[in-house]
Length: 329
Ligand SMILES: C[S@@+](CC[C@H](N)C(=O)[O-])C[C@H]1O[C@@H](n2cnc3c(N)ncnc32)[C@H](O)[C@@H]1O
Image (cartoon, rainbow, N blue to C red):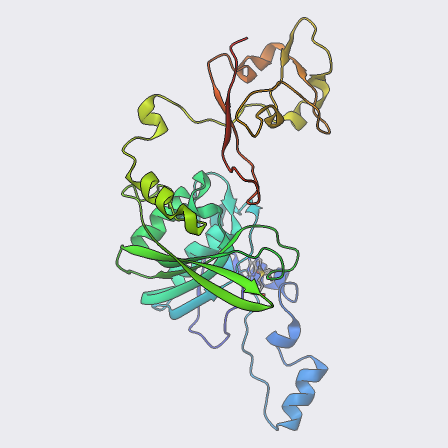
């Protein structure tokens, strides 16, 4: 993420700008862009008999808060990935954080701060913020400060971003815009040319932090509308959603291949089959079927009736939600 040098002085999140700026110098963007120090840049500037303007600021963008109203347009392809923010940054971005921070979520909050009322944000990001729990505060913030105008899904995962397999979305938001319907398009590639397909639109949920239910395929349109209209949520029906308590690689020495006193069956995602039935198995690499408990492991045991849901599925799978009932025995 880069900032023009000739903008009004930015407000830094307290105390940290100097340290981060010098630490990051030359690491994030080419020095050719930042200063006229590169021989090619110097030669070009000399030939044109002009000095090469300094157009880019090298810094930790997360420590830059605008002093002025901001920009008419903020475009970004922000970094993504889970990040442990420095305490002053966590405090600074508290309004959009819920649980683990992801860099692209924090950069979206930053874009809101950098955009003036009426201005537009155009960001390429992963799709996880549309419904992920860790992004609920961000969705709430976007709904109230910069509602989406268009959400365009990149259909082609290959040939657009090198080495990126993550589902990506190109979203535009208007700062202090009207909360209404956001349009949805699919962006594809055919013979190396961009294809844009109109899919429909979606409405933001009444609960501002709720998931944005947008069609991801043309035939999802009716499904998305039905989902939006459904009066009940799982919680209304008495279900509680939770992730399994065991993180297997923190307990490697307790995994067992045989059932013995003190061992319990360990349920891996592979036990949920694509036809929705349960098959107790542990065939994948590093999987073992049993778990030796210790005294302090009571909290790891699940002893209530459950519907198991495989939560990491790929876009290419015919079904994205695969569930099976956990048998009582
Ligand atoms: C997804 S890349 C996009 C690069 C470029 N904007 C583009 O579209 O090709 C994200 C960039 O953000 C930079 N970056 C990561 N954390 C940053 C931070 N805290 N401040 C400024 N830039 C950062 C990375 O080094 C990387 O170059």
